[in-house]
Image (tube, rainbow over all chains, first blue to last red; front, top):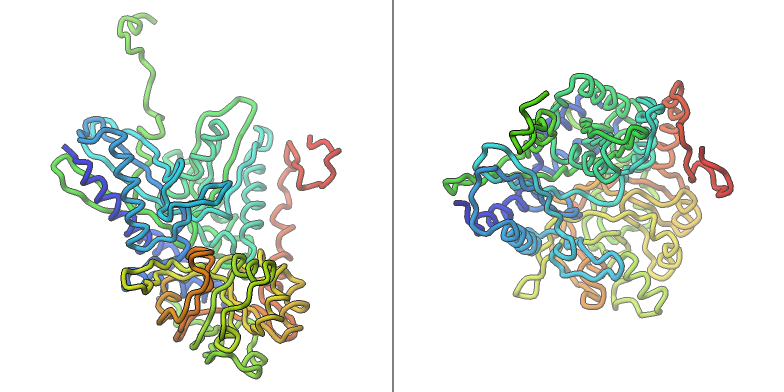
Length: 321
Length: 226
């Protein structure tokens, strides 16, 4: 049985880890970019960021003062047993958010969109977002937090089948150039691209591709994996590096997620996860133990529903044909 | 690290910055500051420039460096503050206040994120013997947080909240910052942006035109986007 108190404790712990410790995959990705960066200014910026991450971990202080919009992704094993119910998990994570905001400290960024009022704790109407997913056979609960900056670097566009890969490239260039100038996107970033689905699904897929997959991970479809590499190179050949200075450091990695979409359309979204790619995951086991990691392992085969078939739950309907 | 250090010139300034120190700053140099720095953004600018409230006493004498910043500060039971990370907020949004603010306060160094609109460097900053420094990254929040040694004063905390209040920080080796503009009105961001722009048209060569155009490519709302 996984107790609600343990879920709150794990939620609080990953809030700290996400704000303070740069994920190793992202750090190695940036170090690799420093090796090939030829722009002096862009190189200096990346070297300073590496120093900054070391300082953050040593001092146990947030790597960036804009600690983004804290939120959660929860994956429940089919066989997980937990004491507080689904709404109990949500209450635990709201409390973890409020406490961590005071203790880390995180910047209380969350305000009412119209009245700009706040509770000074990153909790409010529809905040923090908690997204749910499921895993067959498992008896654990994974809780991931992401603190993504909110203002610059993401966009959505309805393209059409005739636009093809060229249309995706054009949209990606538009977005990276528009938000890359002066470094508003806080590049080099992990770029997530959502293709297909409904409009809202398209945004969600792109966001999750940016925030929940690690540097070096590839889409299981070899052709999509090749497109990820191609678009990464396209971004790094713009001629722009960190802070919009001359350079080649724009895209640490590119991740694409797809969903079946309307036959007449090809919606696309682009998301950039910033220079403080804040993510941390806790796995709560059935025996009460907790392990921490930086790879959310969000996109399992079940998550993409690619291998899930559609036999009827009424087995008598499956006999014919 | 694979590369042994960078090639940029480094400068350490003691604050308040003297006119000759500011005149000697070259764009693209790296700067670290020691002394007193104050934060002010739209909340403070509105209060003073729009509502006409007086500046906090002694501010002008204490500091001539305005940081566009909202610190991650947590009040403590003893009345003090823990300053965690410190990073800048995008400065271009404060352009409309800047000239009046520099005139009123005698501020000579503006620090922020992303620089100012291109015209401001000569017209607003250089004409008042002031320069712009940009934070690096963005943001080196932990390094800058380390550089803040103490909170000397905080003004309008109740009225404006933590993010918008005017904080007076004692800083030591506070940085890194990069010199964006000089007293001639040159801007590093502008120069670098011009170089990047030269290669942009080539990136789109060979890509077919989009099936559907968008408002924004044209400002004429009578056009059809098909």
